[in-house]
Image (tube, rainbow, N blue to C red):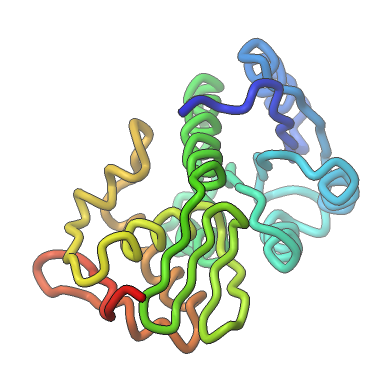
Length: 228
């Protein structure tokens, strides 16, 4: 499924040269863009324009990228790709735990970033268009409304977490290998450790229903329970 033509991308980057290159490549692919060089302006633009995706550098003037990500996640499931020069694994996982849908480490090629943007938007657009609902145990998933609930309580999921939950709820009881879950990410798949981080974060976001998402030793993960 293709990306929405003319989608709006918010570029949050304080290095003007990098922001300009990203903007040029994104516009060449038909995207519209907005730019912010600090956290305050980023949140102003995000709330005013409601972009289809945010490219978010972590090391920006206050509030920093992590604080911006926290603020976005409190309000909406807008896809976010983190741009960072931090290479420590804990920082990457921290970004994912806060709700980033993907990350790219600096230095990077603008073409790589554009490919990641397209991959994340394909996932988000695919799940929004599918007119289906799932119920497993006390979990409910409404793809058309982009809503997930546990015991009637709304859950705040990122686009990637929603996509993972859809796969599990479409096949309750099936043990998914990490390789199968990697396939959900398309051509721009992360490594298996990143899949583990996404599943861990999804389990936490499921709240009281998190126990339904089980680890299958030596295989991967499955959602316990019967469809309703």
